[in-house]
Image (cartoon, rainbow, N blue to C red):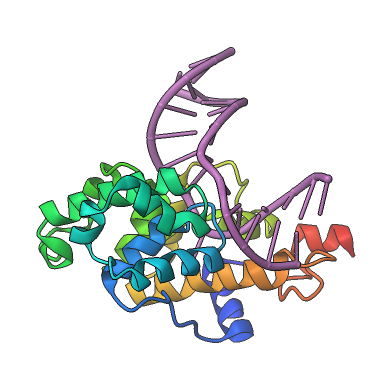
Length: 215
DNA sequence: TACCAGGAGAAAA
DNA sequence: TTTTCTCATGGT
C-alpha cells in the first residue's frame, strides 16, 4: 500500500476527525508542549487548571511563579520540565508579537525559529505549525512510526526529518490533508494497534506484520 | 505490579 | 556523533 492508499483506508474506517481539540491557537500550542510523552486526558486536566486559574495567556504564564505553574501542570506529568518549556515558548511568542506576529513568517523560517525555542523539538514544532497555525508541516509521532513500520513502508529507525520528507513528498502540500492524516494515524493507533490481542480489529490486518504474527 | 502515553534536553559513551 | 538517562502523573 502507498501512503495515499493508507490515508484513504483510514478515512473510510474512522471518518473525518475534528482536530486539534482546543478553543484557541494559543491553547493548541500549550497542548502541544504538555502532550509530550503524555496521554491527552492528562493534558486536558492540566489545561483545565490553567483555565480555572485564568492564566491561559502568554503574558500570565510568563508572569506566573515557576512553582505555581508547575502545580497547575501537575496532572500532565513532567511538571517541572514542562513549566520551563511552556514559559520559554510563551516568552518567545511575546517577542514575536503573539500568534498574529507569526503569520508574516514563511513556514521554513518559522519552523527553524520554533526549533530554537527550549522544549520545542521537531514533533512539537510541526504540531504547532499544523494545528495552531494551519501550515502544511507533517507531524511524525510514535503512532506513525509504529503503524508504517508494521505495514512495511519504513524501517522505523529513520530519523524524524527523513520520515517527514517521505510523507510530505508523497502528499499534496495541504494543511487540511496533513491535519486529517495525522489525526487518523493517532486514532488508529489508539483504537487498533494498542488493543489486545494486537490488531484484532485492525483495518490493515491482512497487511500488518504484527497482526499476521499474532493471528 | 508493570507498562504506556499525541518528546525533548542533558549527560555519557 | 550516537546512545542512554531523566523527567512524572494517571489510566489500564
